[in-house]
Image (cartoon, rainbow, N blue to C red; front, side):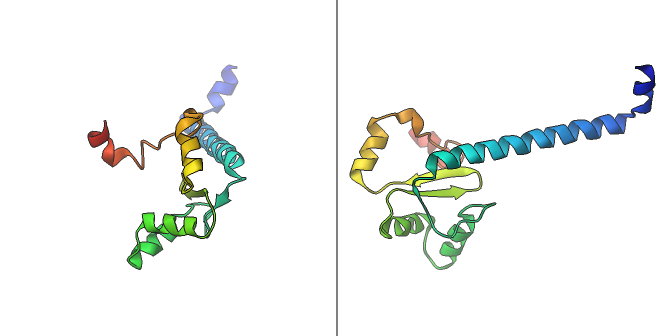
Length: 129
């Protein structure tokens, strides 16, 4: 045991700890992505998604043409798909236009539909509480 400890220097231990932390974060990220995708895979996805950033590039491109991100989401819904799933980095969103589907979201199993407090609602929290 003493011989093993003498062979390890502090740099090797730190490198091993950082590698283990990065591996854990990567596995957790993949697990969350696959779990969310598996729940939403039967819902129509918005077009032109990127595997890494999701629909961020489409939303940036639409603002260059004078169309807002909310208008882009409305366009996705007007193509006949309702509801539509979109992704911004690792945050998933669902756009709903059908009143019956929206009623289901509000009245049944509300815990299945989480609010995105960190990204979408953050600017409005001081107003809404």
